[in-house]
Length: 295
Image (cartoon, one colour):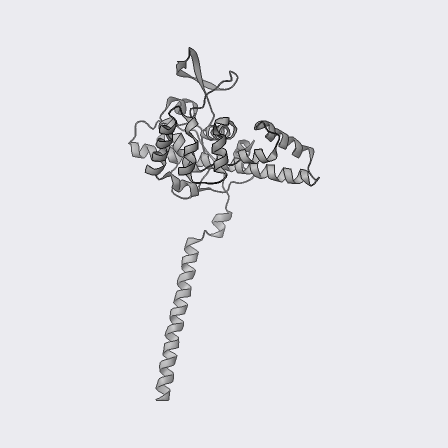
């Protein structure tokens, strides 16, 4: 009787132990699957350059870790199905959006680093000149204001504005000048393209860029500098919610709040907010193309 009781107890413990072991193994497998592999996290890549006008040259973005691709030309997206056109446009834009954001983040870190060094009396003349350059860029004498300007907003908004302003990559300015956001040119010395219309008897010109990246970075600079977006800049320091932020972009278009509603619809219907969590694959520090973009 006692032996039977002991055997039953041992069997019970064995089953519990086996179940516990199986649970631990299962948890380990799950953690292994959901966590990025160390070698992938630490792996760095080079910036790829694409100057083809072939639609098939656009690399599909099928992972939240996005390869850096520098698109120098915009393929003709008009002749493909609208659903494919929209996805191709996003696949083309996303790498450059993330690279532009990364450049701004690096500029912000550099300003913080330089300011701390100068305050500690350890900064160099080069540091001083860099900080002066950044202050002049944003027409301010306060480092805190420079940092406020160097605060990129959500990818979903950047993509939605690009889609509206360029007709999902089909506008003439986008195709011929890489001008995704319809940014005007007032400088006769810069590369630009003439619009087919005039205003008040004067010709309209739009800026011409060497790549999609340049267009996106310039768009970020426009948002960072123009007084029309001052309130937007203040609110984006408080929230990353695209549906709240877009209400402060009414000045971007003459359509005002009709434009804001269009932004909301584009973000919502195309599930663009999912791209707010996408990241740029780590780029090799010595990559020459990347270093040229950071200049």
